[in-house]
Length: 222
Image (cartoon, rainbow, N blue to C red; front, side, top):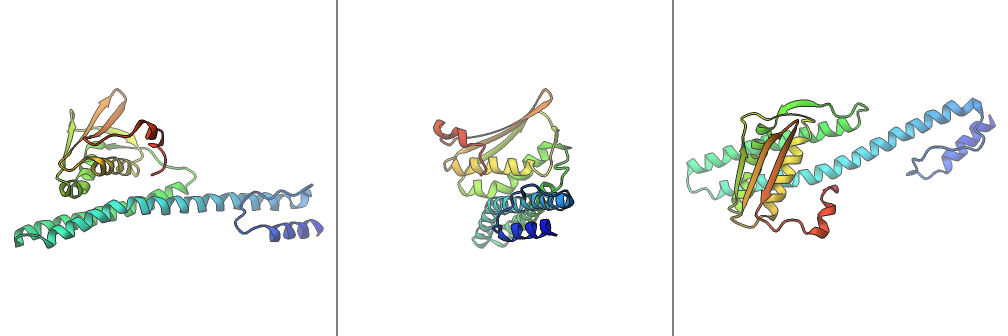
């Protein structure tokens, strides 16, 4: 029983935030399966906690823009000049609530997929409807700054083999950044085209661009 007592003492002395593998000197063969199982549990627990932290950070970041859009829609509805305009703006607000609901579902799906050992599954989608939907979702923010957003493509359908849960988040972040950094009455051009076996999405705006000394940070989280 001495090895079990040693293992118990070792675990009791560990810090509650220490999820490193258990390492015992000269682990007896009889308790090796227990130590291996505990280490497997610690790995899964660490992965779960990291996924939860990523989800919290992503959700807090991604929800800022939709909430801002809903606020703009409410303000516009309150300032409507007549009943017909108010009804139209309320319809836009209703559509914005639906989009926010879809975003929440996407984030929850991402969280589940990150905890799945199989990861994300590739599917073929038509990219153009995704671009239109995300531009429409952010249009109230552009309208508030009197900016013009234009989507161009030389095809009517743009198939893409990708992770469908991630594409809207990528597009939303790119267009949202363009709206933020383009000046009032500025211009934002979103273009999409096929290039061989690949698809190129381009988001250009009339803002100042990214300073050369900060370009290496572009692909950092948020």
